[in-house]
Image (tube, helix red, strand yellow):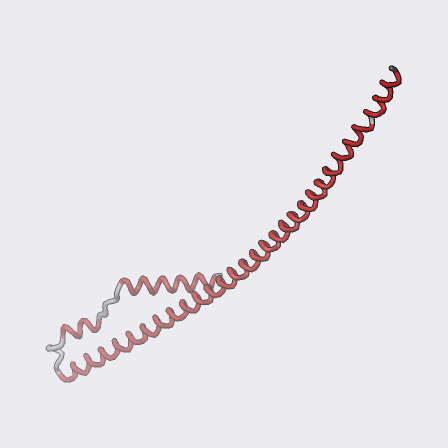
Length: 148
């Protein structure tokens, strides 16, 4: 009976090793598969990071270009506003001079009494408060640009 027990013990020992080998093989292939999947995912993430960096770089470049263009447009508009104000002031001065000339001519002709009210208004031109505010605002903008 001792022989039969020993033969059974000998047969039972190789069976757990065989089972372990069977279990190891599928786990090994699953580990390899997971490693491949991990590598693929890491490559995709790296590609997405590069795409994002490229997109950010392009966006930053566009923003800089647009800011530069807007800055140039603003400078140009401020220069045009100042130029228009200067031209308007010159026109206003010309009109005032013409009014004074007309008033002087009327005085010489003796017609001052009939146009006296109009002549008084011509000598004291009214300046619109809004025009003064806009003019000073544009001058401040130009000064700020010159400082920068």
